[in-house]
Image 1 (cartoon, rainbow, N blue to C red):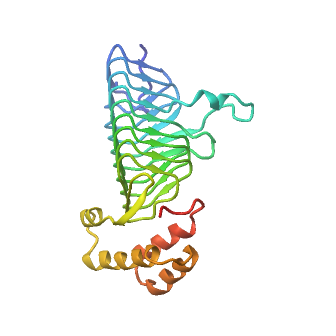
Image 2 (cartoon, rainbow, N blue to C red):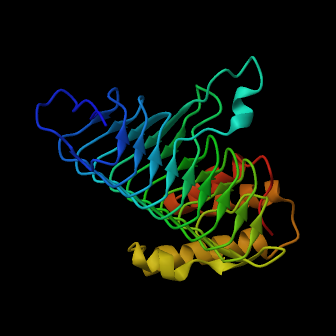
Length: 271
């Protein structure tokens, strides 16, 4: 099979002879492509990447440096329904940052709208059988565990963790450093720094372990605990709780991020 272009360099990428790599694909010189993998014509893969056996990477897909895609993963393949209407003749883009790990049989869709690509930042860990829907926005340092499904348009902020066999509904936002438990259905926003689990989902306090791992100081953790009580331990409307948070915690950047997240919510928050 013809090899892809090598991003303006002369040295050939390391491509297994059984792999099918479009001659129009652009691969850095040290990219490894395993047996029976498929790389489409509009794909760009930067240096240090490894594409596992039987993986498929196609569509308008950009993969940043030192990302590894494991066996059987499907990256950048649009849903057939996206081609059924005249006003959506083609899918958008999928953009993946640096240092990501995408494990076996994960499925990552490109954006439906050419103006809203599906985006993954850097250093994310996407485990086996995870599905990432069209137009999802995933930050940096996110962990998504086995067989979780992110519907179209989901946003996951930096350093959040989503446990396995979890369903995240369309357009839902998962806040920074939030922790979502396994076997949970999430159809409202999960505020930053909190732990949520169960069916129906319930909030179980702040994510103390995650905050410690990311070097959030004891003082800041105590501040977040007080903010949590304002938000969840009263019967006031959400708007009033937000106003109290803004007045009481004006000096805390962490709480200010929480307030901004709450004010942007369109689906309400998990209770």
